[in-house]
Length: 238
Image (cartoon, rainbow, N blue to C red; front, side, top):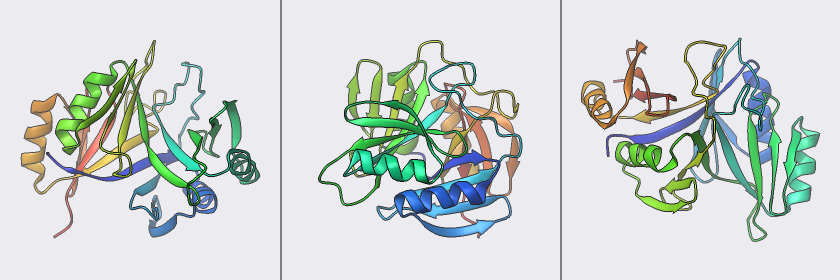
């Protein structure tokens, strides 16, 4: 384990609007708010942040012209009622399946509502990362986050146990990586991973296959994973 998952971060031009959408849909609470960043907490311990991206471009799933880079999987006890509520709040239906519906939130990020009849309300099951090699990217994040590989199927993989903030990986044909910070090929999502020491964390993720990006602050550094997706190593302020 190099670090622990601190939060999942979504880009949006209107961070207040997107935060309000997920608060109303899933009952998430606001943890903190700044001019360009809002952090939300889920009842089951996830932190999801909304980061201001004035030049945010909406994904065009299932097309790969402007591909999604990741999506959230939410469990709901009633699929039709959950979908109706999401539409009322500003979502759009992208695809309907028997056990899940894929929708786009107001910023265009796809998310899945998955039927779980015994679920108590809306819960965040996990975040799914698109990639060219599901097993390879799962192995990278397993090393970084210390989460074991708990599922592997045809083009999909998962690290971490169900209920313990798992990360899922979905192999996509003709995968197009983001080219951060180029807004023409936006990141859309990224993970913040907390470490005890930025220098030691950097050495470890580089050895695991990450690449350093030319952007950093006092309390964070930016990298890309083997699929080209940005992620940040962070430390808590002293």
